[in-house]
Length: 346
Image 1 (cartoon, rainbow, N blue to C red):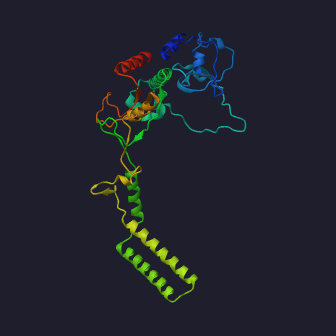
Image 2 (image 1 turned 30 degrees about the vertical axis):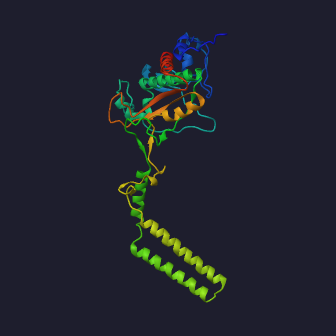
């Protein structure tokens, strides 16, 4: 029986990777990845005299030669290292044929929110659109990317089926903690309150007047039938009666509208909610995965879960990603073997 060659874990693959002399272009862009330049054995020196097109964002920069040129540190996110670019003062913007840029304004470097100094994570939360350019957040993104890829690689290599479990659920899987509730009742009640202020509900006098009109229209139809009026006259009178009834129904329905969250018997009426019952953000995909395990044997889910636990520590997160494998026809021994193999693989 031939041996099957086991694939190396991503960490070992990375360690075994050889640096290459090739300059790699992005598959979906006319630019060269900075990683393929700075990752060369010569650090990119062998590309002297060649023309390459790189794109990215300026991390830092400084002027030299009394403003005649500047050094820029360029990063495109393909690797942590930056590409140093020298810019002459005479360099002009290359515009596309038939188009161009007309930019006016004064740049104030003092107002740039991400200085070179070491910044706290709390500070970066106030600048979400720029924090991914910092080394710390970019490194975290790369680590999470590698771990997620390794997780899927491990289970796929061991013939597990990846199952997508719902984020919004009506089930409390573990029943051990608070859940985040998903509802449209609050937003709908706010809309209703604003709408009722703009267009107040009908008064009792309005409804009584509508009832009187229905009664009059009904009496008119009776008289036309007794008088054996033409079919055309009776049809027109019946149409007016139906219109009056429809208007009365709308007024009565609108008079029942009350500001605030709808209640029944002193409790919130979830039948008026989006799902007509209570719904929550999932705390676990275990219930759904177990049903699949009873049909296709080896399955796993990997996705976000939510816990509304009132604790602000690193061990009690409101949102986190969780791996949940389920194996049919296996006991505790095999479960432990799977967990150990996964940890070693990572």
